[in-house]
Length: 197
Length: 197
DNA sequence: ACCTGAACACCGTTCAAGT
DNA sequence: ACCTGAACACCGTTCAAGT
Image 1 (cartoon, rainbow over the protein chains, first blue to last red):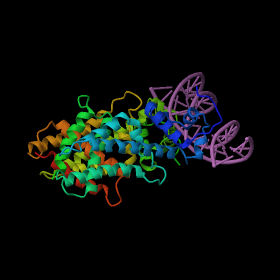
Image 2 (image 1 turned 90 degrees about the vertical axis):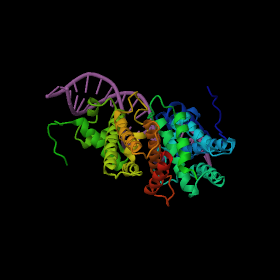
Image 3 (image 1 turned 30 degrees about the horizontal axis):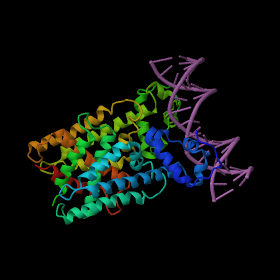
Image 4 (image 1 turned 120 degrees about the horizontal axis):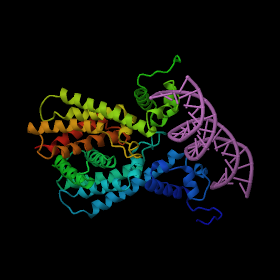
């Protein structure tokens, strides 16, 4: 029951992204329509085209937003962790937790729906999140816990592992007996062994 | 320029799935429309509903078809590999190769578009493909190359790794310098170390 | 500069009707 | 049993027009 007033959004693009994220989170990607977003913001359904090229571009912004909070989550997990050989474990847990608690949003980030269309860059936001992982690996290398391979390459491997765990959980591929937090714990252990010095 | 004749398909559902797979492979998931499938098969656009509940169900069949060929690919890779500690490596290569050569089809299999709607089982086809992996792990355990954890759990971990590598490749997350076959080679090595006895 | 309203082309799905 | 044809409700997008 929003009161209609002379529209003067401080930041309509931002409001649209937030509304899109909310819709995706609560009702799923299929329920995201430009008409719905516009209506819920008290704006015409074509107002979006003033700020985004098309729906695809809106999804790109949604994905970027997701990568930002994922980066923050990873950073927080890393900074809160105690030094030691398993210092990276909380990052893995945080990663999978993000995916499981925001399944639709996570799918938009990795679903290929984003840059399937235009030649848009996958987004510097994803590289930012990746950078947090690389930094952690470098630190663990200096602490003597991780083998001295190229940190970028090791980070790709680690990302593949946690991403794979997250996706299997999201797709319901895990047997009922195997919960996602159990699998990431197991994966963390095998991962550590695999990249140890 | 197909000749119109009294329609008598031997197996229309099967033809529809094949046509859908072809469309997805050549033009992408977004280009898949029931109208198009019908037209290319010389049949009404609503004929599909005689054999499938809806478009979702057709995608489910497409996914199942994908899991079958993936299973065959994995099995072939395993059987062609020489005994030894790195005997599972070709399976990893075959897995990523399947994903990279059939990106859209692979996304349908894991995109969540399938069982996002109905309460349809993820498909015994995926479990079949998974079973090939479990068998390989059991064999490697008996050969003394893989630690004696629960094979199912180890298989989940291995699947997460290759699935993660495949997804990162498909999403264009890999730097230009890192090709997917290079990453899976690296991943295979670290994976082996991680699960070795 | 920013937003609207009508219109366009397209889609999945339903349903009565045909053979 | 299997397929058709018209109709329905919905969608993303375009564009001339308003302020």
